[in-house]
Length: 434
Image 1 (cartoon, rainbow, N blue to C red):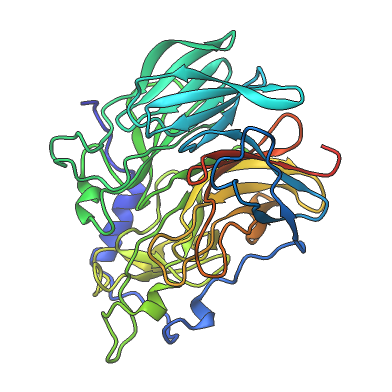
Image 2 (cartoon, rainbow, N blue to C red):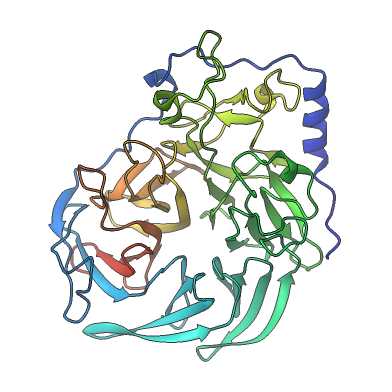
């Protein structure tokens, strides 16, 4: 097992302060009150279109005409069929790589003029490969137990080495197969540092905070290599991981389920559906050295932007585990249980411009279900503006779904390519004239 470094001193100082602090305040809203609930994502007046399905790609769910909501004048088509498609990355040679954790593969889609792309297997026999990132001539692949680096030359991935070994997953002896968030993501900073996510083992598994190697963290390997160290802690499941135009690193976090009602009164400490449905919001946060994102002792509250933290009354009732008022507010958010997955930054045509694309998978246990979509967050002055829906319509009025986006990445042709592990598809979202 690698020699994991100690948690950042900034976190230790925060915990020390928390030990002598009184209970942190909580919001004074009633269950489900709009004052502590993120607003619904905005849009630029989306238009309904029929998803275009080329010949040979019309297997279910596209054996029935499907309607989607896209920007006016844009089109959405099925570009390829890839069962269980997850995260994606474009290569310098113009190929799109797709991770398939369910089969242990990374597949390569090579565009062909006027038809479906050529599909081939780039890597096989991996352990739940998920995150993909490219820097220089190096391809990084995040398996469940390690991060690999390959030389990508002439369309082939060769010379594998392990850039971050010994990551926790279901095979870790101390976990005995219990691991809820084994899939890991990876991003490469402008200085060559490797960032990767390690999700929590469960919903509120406090033992993750003291585990070695750490869990519920974003880890960093320095540019010169060496052991990874915790970069940001208290991150329940930061599947979304991406580098912004200014070189900063951001994460989109799946926060906890079944949070107890925090207000004094007869409902205190109860799991109330009307409260749980909108609490806590999912975080979209800037990563900085030693930052603490609270899980499982503090939850973001309110929104959509600059969310304060309130104490979790199930795990931090008296506020002594962590002083939630001392944590910097979360920069952005989306509705509770949205399940953000892949995250990337892109430049889109007007009226969008530069911003973050996030694949929103949709809730798994909320009633009514939170709808899947592709979200856009405009990049402004080194920060992210409020959530906008770029592509919607995957969920019908009765809550049934025909698709669940995972990731969206801008292609070299100016279109956006979207993976969908439920429909087994890669979509091409094309602006006018593209």
